[in-house]
Length: 94
Image (cartoon, rainbow, N blue to C red; front, side, top):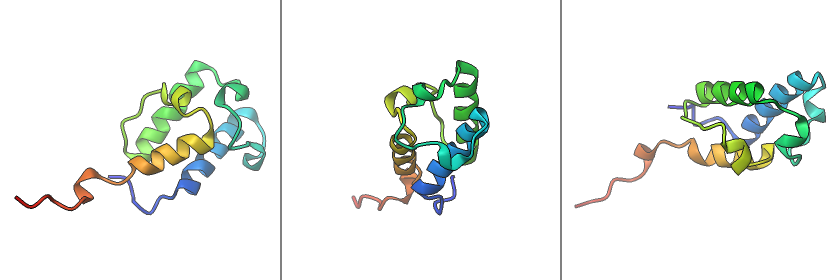
């Protein structure tokens, strides 16, 4: 399971750094409110980004997430919400 200490901001910063590397700009210049499509990411970069996120976060992800959650802010909120394992919930008493 993903380290539950990973915060939403850490996920957002990781994506900013990844996209910043692709764009050859400082990560801080990558606006978390800008739609992914405005960054000019091609399909190979999208697949690579999602694949690396899957590995880091130990979550199964679909490349279509970038369309469903079109900004770094929206995507990081979604991924952070998925990070807690279901088994951490309190068991239902019979």
